[in-house]
Image 1 (tube, rainbow, N blue to C red):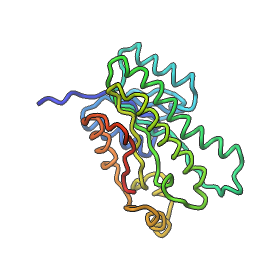
Image 2: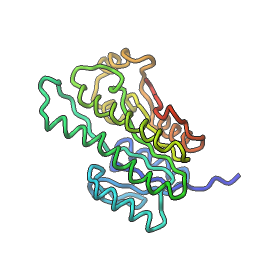
Image 3: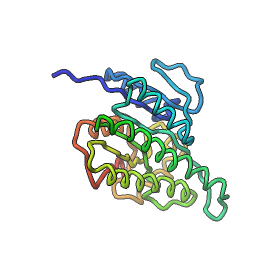
Length: 231
């Protein structure tokens, strides 16, 4: 049985999880398109400068790919921000930036590429939440709220797209080995967070990749589009 190569668009591919997932998709023979705020990285695939927080930029980018006949099969949104601040000390600018960087970007990317995918009634749209949306940790309240908002948005997209074959999905991740918060938090603090959720553990990039592949190959999981990995 021949497996057809997929066209995969990754927002936030300049480093971290996005770059690692791009490498795994390429190894599987898929075509990858990258999108990030800055074009300062040589990559073995086509990259575009797109700010996922900018409505006009995301809309124009979606239209560009659609006009080229390159509507992605899978969109993976790794764009986002993290910050640690106590709620009593947080400024409105800090709160606004995290909500825009995580929730608004997820909304814009999902909305614009769902519109494009509806023309052929297929496609996977992946956003990411965090263990912090499920664990009350001092200093992570604003970040947790922004990621909880991503989960709520994905659930709403799932309801509104229920008559289609599109798969809006959210991977709620624990710390990913060697990336992001996992690289900056000590083991004791990590174990403290793990103790606040039922099955807390560190996850690997391959596990995240496999989850995306599973979503792609299975029917839409209506009513339950948030997948917990390491929680």
